[in-house]
Image (tube, rainbow, N blue to C red; front, side, top):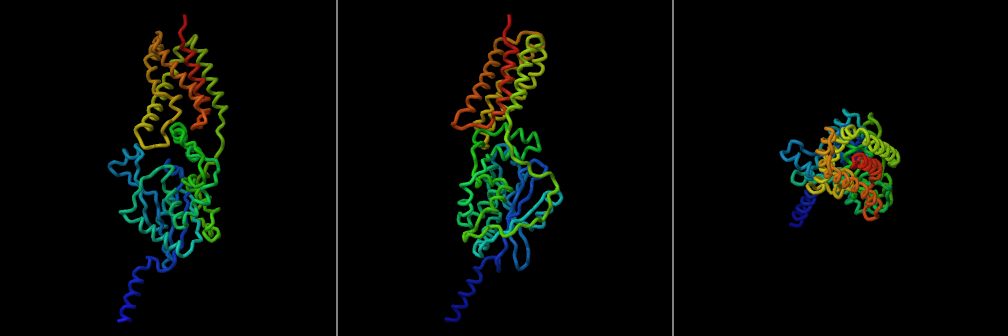
Length: 388
């Protein structure tokens, strides 16, 4: 009976062993930015290699299904659904090889228990009933999921080591830096993000960018004091332009352009108001569109980083109220008191934006837009002021 009982215990222990009979090798794959807009931020994944079969599985948190019937509405509202997918690493590399994007892997120096725990957690997370999560651009994306998975097996050690350090970057600075090769994408981030996107981020939060996470891992140590990254291996060379570098926004060229346009509008308004109205008309249409979009993002979506956007004081939906008066000017008629009143309110909003910028409560880094648009609004106000 004792032998039978011991045999049963051994059998149960054998069945309770993890899927990996030997300790797996763990790595973090970092994919460089691509040329399509949703590839600008780069990508990453966790690679788990079974040492017995040498089979490498890529645990990729960046999958979404654009064919879902509510995909577009979810995207607009900021309620995106992403999922974790487990696929052969070589299959995951195919797309990046075709696009010319570089891929490197940081092989980690984990303890046996840490490697087994991480491999088991990823396998469980990849099951269909556990794979989906709500995607947040800056707070919960493919890179932060990789970061959090590593932090759990390190007992919170990753966060403790990088939470207190900062490069002075913000959600806005990283977004506009990486989006800068596509001007329209850069414009969308810089105009559309509110003041909450300008809070300085520690390296922990900065690692929503895969390349930033890779840099942080190089400086991280495991629980016993050894470097976390054992070695780095390049799998694919990067054949595209390199990742854009960060740099300060110089406001004075924007100010020079704004002052020149504002003075030209004020002077031309005396003799050629039709010309000024013809140029201002598309400007007011665009300002109204951008302002309405900012209001929608604030009150109609879950894009929290676009809320309370101070650029509403510079690009106001009230600009649409100027269109009938501009049309009257084009026909050689007086635009009317209502037109001038709205023009004054818009110019006042631009002046207020300068004071809001200097408030220490929750400043927004939009001084370059103020420098450009404030003189233009004042110049247009002067161009269409009432004359005897």
